[in-house]
Image 1 (spheres, rainbow, N blue to C red):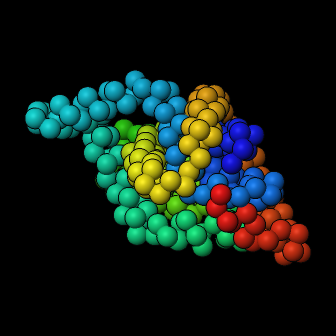
Image 2 (image 1 turned 45 degrees about the vertical axis):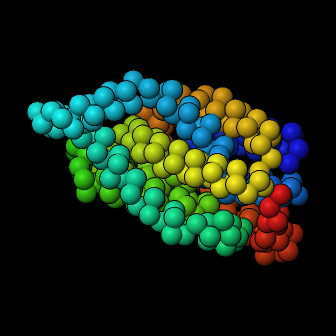
Image 3 (image 1 turned 180 degrees about the horizontal axis):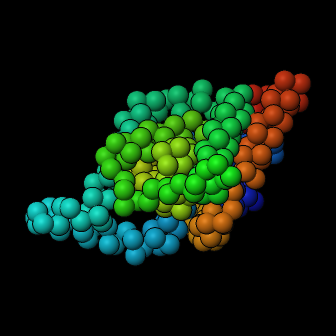
Length: 291
C-alpha cells in the first residue's frame, strides 16, 4: 500500500464511518474503482480505531458520566436506577450480538461478504429501509391535517428490549454496505426514537464493538505480519481528524434535516454498481487479492 493510497483510504474512512452509507463498502469500492488491492477487513477495523477515538473525544462528557455511574452502581444499589448507570448496562447488552456474530462469521466477513454484488444489494436494501424509517419519523414530527404530532422517544425511555434490538441492527453492519450508523439509526427510528436519540445511541453503542474489533485485528495482524503498519497508522490518524469533523457536522444536520439525501445516494450507488458488474466493466471480485 502506497502513502497516497493510505491517505485516500483514511480520508474515505473518516468521511463515511458516521454517515449512513457504509464505510466498509466505500473502502472496498475505492480500492476496486482505483484498481488497488482490497485494503481488507483488518485495515478497516484498525482505521476504525481512529474514527472511534473521535467519538470518545466528541462524546467525552457523556462517556465519563456513563462509565462513572456504571462503576459506582456496582457497589451502590441506590444508583442502579440512575439513567447513566442503566445506559452503561444497555451498551454492554447491545454489544453482545455483534460480538457473537463477529466471531462466528469472521471468515465470511473477510471473504464472501466483500463481493461487490452483495455490497450493491445491501446498499439498495438498507437505503430503502432508512428511507421508510426516515419517512415515518418525519410524519410523526410534522403531524398532518388528520393527525396530531406524535411525541417520539428519547434515550431516557431506552430499555433492555430496545437495547438488544439496537444491538442486532448494529450486528447487521458486519456485512459491507449495510452501514453501522445506517442500520442502528434505522432501527431506532422504526422503534419510535427521535433522530438525535437514535444517532447518539448508535455512536455510543459502537464504541465497545469497534474498539474490540480493532484490538482483535491488531493482535492477528501483528502475529501474521501482513499489514503495512506505517501506512495503516497514517490512515488511522487521517480517519480520526476527518471523522471528528464529520461527527460535529452530522449531529447538527440530523436535528433539522432528513436522511433522504443519504437514501438517494445509497440507492443510486447500488444501481451503478450493479450496472458496472453486470456489463463486466467491473469484476465483482475486483481488487480482492489483499495487499
